[in-house]
Structures are given as C-alpha cells and as structure tokens.
Image (tube, rainbow, N blue to C red):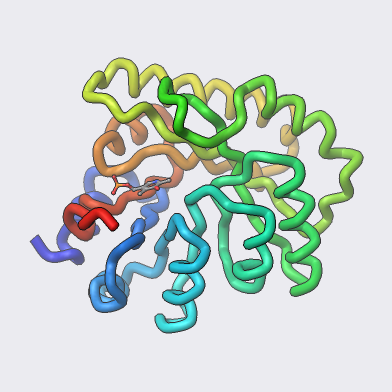
Length: 223
Ligand SMILES: *Cc1c(COP(=O)(O)O)cnc(C)c1O
C-alpha cells in the first residue's frame, strides 16, 4: 500500500479525535513529502540533528514533534520551531526549555515522559519522580512552558495483556495528575501512547496521540 493509504487506514481504525503523528525518523524527504502531499502535516523525529535538517528542507507548515530523548544542550537548536516535545523527563530540561522558549517569545508545549515498561533501557520518570517534579513546579516560574500531558512507551513484547496493563497504568497516572495538578486547565489533555505494534491497544486505553512510523512508511532500515 502507498504511504497515503497507510495513513488513511490507521486513521479509520482509530478515532477522529486522536491525533496521528507520523514518525519519520530515518525516512527521506521524498517519503515525507509523499505523506505531506496526501494532506498529512504532523511528523515526529527522535534526533535533534535530523529534526533540524528536515525542518529546514521541508515545507514550513509541517508541525514537528520531538519524541526522542532530549539533551539539555540541544534544546536551543529546536526551540524556535518545535511544536511539541514528548520526552521531557527532568526539571533541568524544563528549565532550559523555558529559557530557550522565552528567547523566541514562544510558549513551548511539552509532555512529561513516564516510564511504564519493564525494560531498563527506556527513558522517563517513575510515578514517584513525576509527582516529585510536579510538586516543585509552582516555584519554578515556567511562564514559557505549557505541560499538556504525558507520554509513555510500553514494553517491546508480544504479550498484549502486559502492554494493555502498562497503558492502563499510565492512563491512571494521567487521571491522577490531571485531578491533582491541572484540574481546571483544559490544556492538560494529551496522552501520547501507541506505536505501530500496539496502537490499537493504546486507542482502547485512552490514547489521544499515536506515534506511528513503520506502519506508515514501511520497516526502517536500521541506521
Ligand atoms: C520510533 C518511535 C516510534 C514509532 O515506532 P514504530 O514502531 O515505527 O511505529 C514511536 N515513538 C518513539 C519514541 C519512537 O522512537
């Protein structure tokens, strides 16, 4: 199937209210343009350098998301244009994003990444770390940041029940955070869960943003 047909199929299988984010890491500009020309405008990269290069070469009305681990010293390269950073996992990073966003007179939208998988290798905050961070934020004066939700990755496993439980756990954390810290703020509304292998489970468990790469563009050649 074509890239456009893949996007259409995923949209039909999810829900019109759920945002589909096309994960374009390792894909060429030509492949991205194929999706773009079919009407898709939301793309995500996991590396700052690749994101910056593609942003400079591709149409300016693309909404770019960063989904990979972000180092503090690289925030400055994306602060001018990135639409949403999914992978914020420390106060230090929040402070730097705030500082860089202020330089460009922007309000930067971010998600806090929560660790829900069994693997040791995934980034993100534990539930305790998340609440600890949220508790200290009122003293930080982050006037150029909007925290609009949470992001998580399930374990890389065939065990659907485990994946479902992991997504259910982050949805529960989302609801707790919402009622404790963002009760009257409609802005806090996004739950970024679900990739190619598990997006249907994520839709069931309350995803509002799907991050899908290989199901749209085909298997990635490992770089
Ligand atoms: C690569 C990546 C995805 C998409 O993975 P696919 O399996 O190709 O859909 C989603 N989220 C993150 C954080 C990624 O790095």
